[in-house]
Image (cartoon, rainbow, N blue to C red; front, side):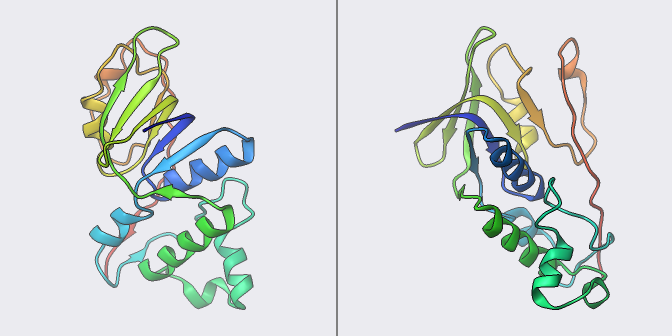
Length: 188
């Protein structure tokens, strides 16, 4: 079964959830694939604290902020800072519920780009389904692998969340937008 969307968001980490919230706000037809906050849940150590405070937000519209969650809970930033991994994951889940972000918990196995300027991306999913999309945002621990294996002539409509140093040579002679906001982590 093939699905079609204007914007496919691959990965449901902080960046993917924020992109989904903004796409919904703008009325952009979109789809999110990936297990919400899975990389954080699986790879971050128990007892980890974020270096940043409660001013770090998922919501680009600054409505469903950490401060708003704390207000709903009758708490203050001083009650939760430094932010624990457990609290941050609870915030991400609350944010996802408030924004009604429905992420399909399935992984992309392959990403192809059809030829020509009007070509669409085709994502082959682990469950055998395919998703056709005009634009793709990659967020998640497999983004580099998918980007490197992308078949087809166009990277122009591909937006990648960068969190580590990579080679930028693949972007040579293309028009590319790089969006990033630092969230640093530390452990106790």
